Length: 451
Image (tube, rainbow, N blue to C red; front, top):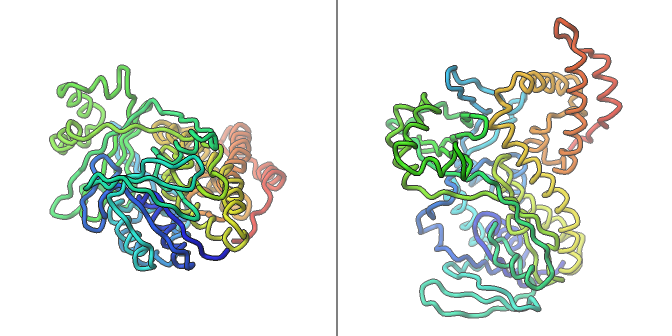
């Protein structure tokens, strides 16, 4: 496809990576963002401080030639460190190979690296520009300068919307009848708090994602390079155990003291953050119709925002960028490119949206269930025995970007059925029928081609 002017709206994380990729191909790129330049401004209040980067997100960064700049920002996490109320924390490794780790990364630092890389590649960056909408034909965009208040219009051969879960341009496509949008809110909200380091050192083990699972809710903590942890409480919005029930300070103090006794020494700081920080909402966005002809395309969260419980929102957005780049080798014009992109990506993003919701139940409850833990150990054993056929679903999603999300969902369901059958048929002494295991695996799980 010959380089043509492209306008990208939204410079959170996916927008700058896409701008970098397209600029390196010679496309004249203009990137608009309502917030100030992240290279000079502070972190926006209420946005998640750090994120989990997995192999699926690393591959597009490598493809764009920027991973070497991102790598120093990363803190490896080997697994989930599960904190029960009355027991020592237990590490549940993410995988059983040395490289099967996820990485905690600060949003602001990652945003700065990607933004600077896009600028170096030749993308024109325009900050403080709020997108107000799109004309019905999709030919012109309207922006308001956040400092002067002046409204102006611009035109481009193609517009790609990476303006996040609350996408203005997704709303414009829906209003034009080009997109059908269904927002599925979660009845749980979240609040972030900071657990400071001690003399620059982490107060908890820094090589894990910490989870305090409590059945209907949970607290998690991700490490930061400065020795602190970002802690996030996921809790129902309303009800007996909810944010609404913790509106008064004494109730919140009792709740934290009872539910998280191992954090007692840190309660004053956590409670101060809890009272001060905003309560965020969570939702899954389902969109049918990601494009308006060959003029406008939705990408990343603008097309398929998901809840954060599989750590794949950012990773899926980065994967979008890589898929679009590969399609530029096959497609001759924007209409073909945009329609092919939606056809290939939408089934996969619907699959990860479903798995993200399921993973919330696993994280807040199942990680404590003996039946779940027994199946998990059996899954690892089958992976060792049949490494080209049986890969736990979590590992497929996080560590095997060559396996599409939809295939991970499908194979994961087959594997769950095999695990449940083998678990039911254990001998009284707990042994698994390995001949039956081999028969089921070979019968139901075709070998995965080497990447």
